[in-house]
Image (cartoon, rainbow, N blue to C red; front, top):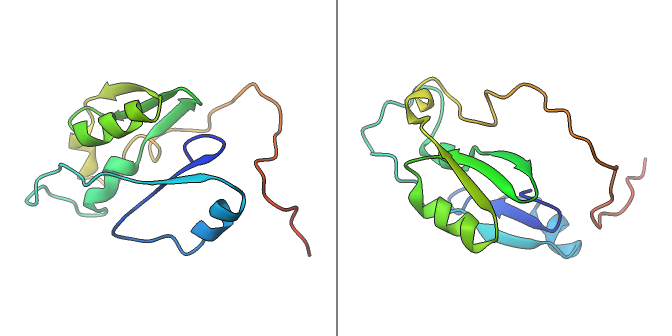
Length: 119
């Protein structure tokens, strides 16, 4: 999820659980195609690291600087995009979300339209 009510999906790897979000009334958007060159060394990951972002809050997202198509997508969705040079880390198998330690957030526990789990 990008924020309550909005989820990002990979067009090349459809999410089998996406109906859970749709039934809860969430908007589903597909990620743009990555801009990483085909010959970029990716030993432990895929070109879809462009989706590996760090969401600071419902308005701000940290995104790899060179992934301009996804910047536009996020801006069109109302986010403030914070571009950061990070592509050189892709080779080692991760990006912003993967390399971030636990983030402490000050907020209330919320329900996002999903049914309560049952045993």
